[in-house]
Image (cartoon, rainbow, N blue to C red; front, side, top):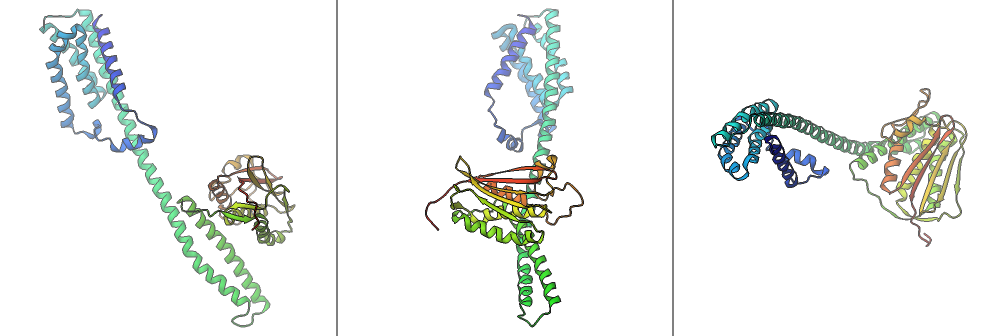
Length: 398
């Protein structure tokens, strides 16, 4: 076996042993290792790297006679240690230089112990060592660049997470603080309209109605912001309990019928006969989901009707389907229709109120209830939203 083959075999064995003894790393711990890794070449001082490099070469010089005496020519693979160490610590240029220096040094050491190698073997070994230094140095530089990029990604990720957390906290606090003055405005406006502080004429009553309508609309926006803040911060809780589906549907239709009547839009309700009336869930949040869907349907429908269908499925789940005859949603816009603060318009002439949180809250609440939501829509032909939830029914009457 010539010098090249012996070096390659010993080097391959060293790589395999290193691979076997290196602890495995899971994907989830990759970023943690980046933060804890303190012994990388870029984190070492020049003095420390110089000491390690010189020590590797001294070890090579001291151990060479013993290794060659035991292994014969195969012991020449010992040169891998100082060359690899220099290349790993200093990079490509020093790796090549270490290979250039180590090749003739290896030949001289063989001659010194009385076992000279052939010219062809010496050239082959020299080329091998230089290539080894170049490859290890290049890989070391590549690894350090990737390491630096990973650190930047970790820092950017942490900053984004912190910014998102602060945004959620701000939304929650601001929304909570806005509710108090809004409650006062609504309360006083209602008292004034009822004549508690004295008689009001027709014009004044109309203006007070506009104040209350605006305050109610603002209260809905504040509630949406507060819910989104709780959802994003993981502080929104569900309170499941038995409830009557018929009572919930009656409340939702009564709440949205006034808005639909302003646009002359009838709301039809169909409950399948095999749908149980007594369910278990969070009635407040389920009503919020259905109200948001109906309100959204009314908002984007100018003529036609709004249809609500309630039905069970065959896999112990039930579906709330809200269908409208409105402007519809373009196919390219449907993937992001549930993103917060996104409003989808097929035409700029449709100026709608709201801040784009209704459908996002519906999606988040549905997911929180282990449900799913789907959309079917065509531009100019309306939209249909189907919310599927687990069916947990009770037979006893409420």
